[in-house]
Image (cartoon, rainbow, N blue to C red; front, side, top):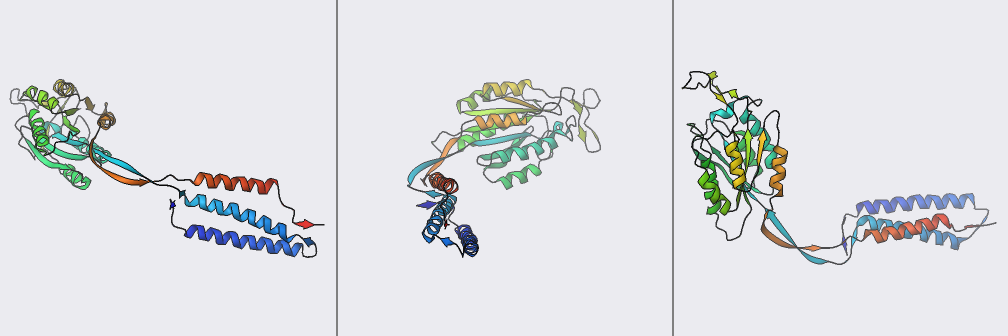
Length: 321
């Protein structure tokens, strides 16, 4: 027999308390009725009845499991790359405190929801770089997210295809014959100066890589802080205005069986993004055999309750007058 709660110290204390109180009860009962005729046999029967259902309560509390069987437990997980746009437009303040600061806050909560999955970080602007390879280590991921800033990558425009190509190459470099659940979360304001991602979407789709895109910013847009001033549009000589451009992000998501989501002060679809990724079926990363047993406490509890009810409804006479 296997016990769900094998620490019997509580049970021993409960037994001692029961014995102490019942001994006090018997002593008091005997003192009150010492001049009356007491049926010792019936007192013993009552003691046995109460001791029996008290013992059954203790067994139920310990959680007895009878019979064992072997059960296969499959471990499932996903491989997820988070690609984060670090071009200077991500410093725009149309989302408080800024687009990038808001993304860092949201991503810290997001990665915690996928602690059982491997997550990697890709940073990009005109080029893409691996900031953190695929890992289960939540501490490492949080550390890299804390250090994100727009000076980590060259900023000569934005090339959305760069992080997609890098994620695909890293997925394909995995030496495994097993099909894996692979996804990319592409986070950007949507500005793309290369516009050559269309050749990649079919390759991603063939490789079974889903791209979930997150558009960051507003349609009203904002100026772009830089140091103590603003970035100036060289064509107009006026402060440059950056606005969310969702058309490319929506196209990438639709062509790779993913979904498009948006983040601003008015629209906050991070929870929907998390739910969409959770719906992606994870691949089997391993399995193990465990010994399973069923807790049979209910039968002991039911028997104890029945005896307790019998004790209350049909009390034994202990005094003969």
